Length: 399
Image (cartoon, rainbow, N blue to C red; front, top):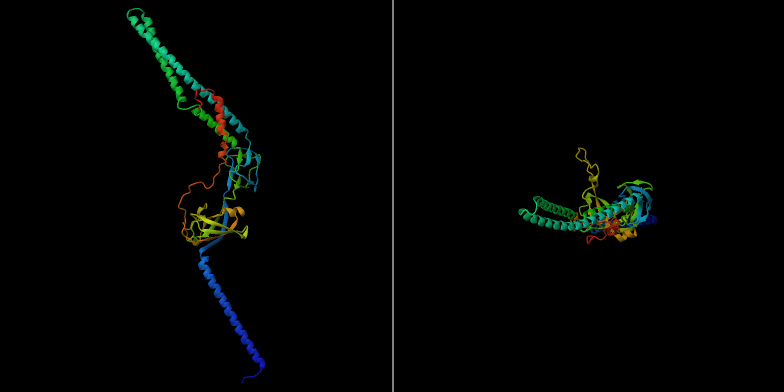
């Protein structure tokens, strides 16, 4: 039998209201979850599925090892770790006393050789005069021989005089032949070249070149702009060619090496855009770059002892391949990175029209320096000056 208690009636009404609110709230939450799921599905289909990312990425770059090209004792170290250096800047100096003596000896040898070759040219000219004289003597001896040959038939000269004339003629022939051989020998040393390019002079000039380079190499310069790292050289240290002294790190020659799983590389191509973030700067700095290349092998195959999986106990491990990523130079200049920093890399693999491997070989140097070519500055003028000072008047043979 229903009751007309007002309190029970109000309680039932409150319960029904709470139940309706709970149902509305649960329906709203379900709609929110469904909307979020749909939004994520759309985002994944339109955007997320075209991105591949990894935190297994690190900054790499060139480390230009600085080594001595000659042996010597270190007399000065002009830069320390973390110092900024410019290409061509002097970093280490070696004692150059022995190299200076060697250059002086080479210069004296070149001067002596030039004078000796001058004598060859002079002797060749003198020998031509000797040949002319011997030819005239032969003509005279031949005429005397013919005259005495006619006179001996008429008994106008003695047989002894005729034999003497015959001997003089043959002697003149031999002397002319000897003079011609001497001229041939002299011309073999001087023909077809001038004094400057005569082989003996060029050999002596090469000695000057070698001694000059050894002297210039006692000053070790920076091969590129960058920052000094791993300095081990000390003043007074005896260094040998090939000993590492320090390294120069050009921070404008930086790239990122990201290690992606082999299952993530199916759509990765050279040239695809990349976004990179560094733990060094945080999420506030984002770098942009491109996929420059994919390694031809996993890191493990290049180890000293590569893995051998031909055993009974084997567990499949997903391998990773290094992917080289170049960054925008302007962004690197604004926010310089350091070698070895951890990076987060995301690659947009939507466009798969590129190549997975490079098709064209490299046609020009990627990195180069001309500081070692500068070591020859002044050498040509030095050799030319020594030759000019010792060539004198060579009748046009000085070149």
